[in-house]
Image 1 (cartoon, each protein chain N blue to C red):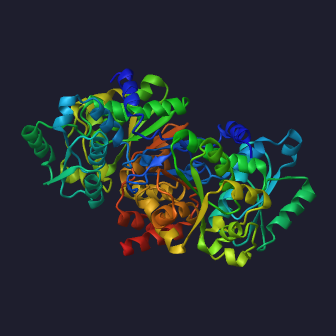
Image 2 (image 1 turned 120 degrees about the vertical axis):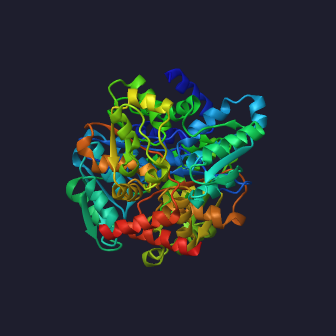
Image 3 (image 1 turned 180 degrees about the vertical axis):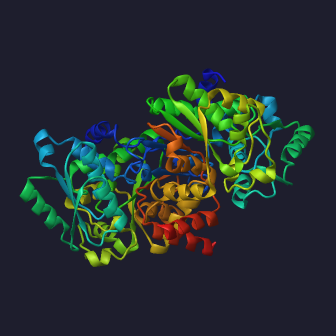
Length: 319
Length: 319
């Protein structure tokens, strides 16, 4: 990924995507100040809009007439639906039937046609729609345009906090981490980009240790509450992660829940579990992280209302 | 209030205050698009930091040595404590003993000395500290530097959304509304700035109808859950409101709670009751508002965790 590709993406998405500020945290440790990068503020509540808008902006007239299709359990689905509607393009979104209802409802509300499918069938069903309709596939992470779009977050961090020392980024399919790490390491060679995974979906940690991709079953990855972090890197994103990632930290399910409560009570942000893993790493894994000025990317905030209430109410009992 | 004073304030506060983005709401009515101005993102969780930083930046060396004092039930206290600490200045903050514990704790955490007092005694106690120590009073709203600081929100709205038609702003002491209305009406003569009050603390509506300030008792104003909206305008702020405010809408306690839940679930923002009144007006008082492109200022997010849980859990039951 070239820096120029990420810069070009930043220009393409500027009119649609919120330029999120870095938020200084008064509750951080003094020797390692923390800023949050709140991607929950995006129109669809997650960073995924950046890659989707960039990819769709690059389609030619012919492709626009044929429409787009994607497969996603969540935020990428909403991102493609929103970005396509914004450009007046038809969108089909293939989602596993197990997807949280709020994400299905939101995707439909943005105007996309949702196609529900069985677990593990989503890519197959999406390719069937590509074959039938000639629609263009906008994959969730395995594409240079998607990686470049997500990488614009790294550009903004480097611009707003050029003396940042540590950037914490969630890892699932690796599109966000690949793009952010490419941008940050190109612009700020001394900054360290560190991935964060749930312990229950730590396939990338195992893969990085092994030096090549290790496959975890869908069932195994689906154990984590962080439903946005259940994918695995592709060859393309894994190649980026091997080169650019300084380290990787894993967090427990309890830590994710606690971090959600801290973000709500002290950061005044509603984060979904996947969006809270970087804050969990900052709060509960300080010994594994370099000291210094830290940015945590709060990647998304599409949490089921019942889960949010449960997390906040349990946190009260524990105080 | 001259526009140049507000512009000068914007320069003074730029290094300390977050430049909050306007957030487009996908869940808004189609014929009156809504953007949120999320002042909850400020370091102290509320817009009050703008006025406090501006006022303290203007102090001379002699005043800095003597320190500052203020009286406030909440966010202004935290703002003065934070802004003073940021400049290495001592701060005394007089708070009613009835202030929510989270706001007392936060004010102390920012390094200020908190002086608790009886209801209705806070101004008197503050002036005693001024007399004893020679400290400089930084009042919550009744001062041109405070109004100019809060007015920077209006500058930002006009810059980011020059075709805005309606700006909804909460009214308490009137510092925020005065500054925002002065900036917006100067820059965008066709935009209408509309104040929002709780029905249970609607002294300003009554005052505007009467043409001069009508006094409501502290006990009467304290009935509202919106603890940040229990003050009344001063002569200075009321004069601004009379000139610049297009209209005023009041909201019920149930509407405030419902709007807090909508902001959390759909806007992914934690708002305190005072911060949710503008969204309540948008959602539940459309018939009283002009149509068109609307901005709602979400003024603060310092809500007691137990209240937040209660509001979100009750909202689930009602869905």
